[in-house]
Length: 196
Image (cartoon, rainbow, N blue to C red; front, side):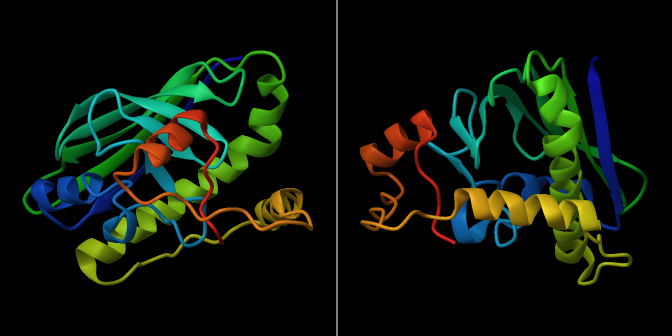
């Protein structure tokens, strides 16, 4: 079973403006595209560039291609069984119009053949629509038809939140600051999670 998943949004904005949104990915509070308040933040061991390692939550990847302001590709390194990539492309669609296009292509293996359609796929779709809403808001100041999470996605999020709830005992150490070698190592291992 191969997965080819596409999300896109036509934005009333020039290509350079939309491309600038993509370039803010994983830039902490300055990230204008990733819906990090509702979802695990996207974090890398360094600024966006080929070879940067990171991801969001348990989904791990490496930047395998990057043309600033135009296109970025991430090759999956986790969860186990995710073999493929996802990418964002900024495509011209006429004067002052641009399509922000996201493609995920992978061949799930092992347990991922079940977890993709039952867990990861619905969460991925909801996250991407939230990101496209943020892009539309940044470009036009409003979202014409905001995405709504399905009851199934709300259930999955509640189950994941309950599963990831901190256990009683010592509190986790705060996340290392950007630029700190400990942060780069924690991101590389997938060990760091932002506090909610």
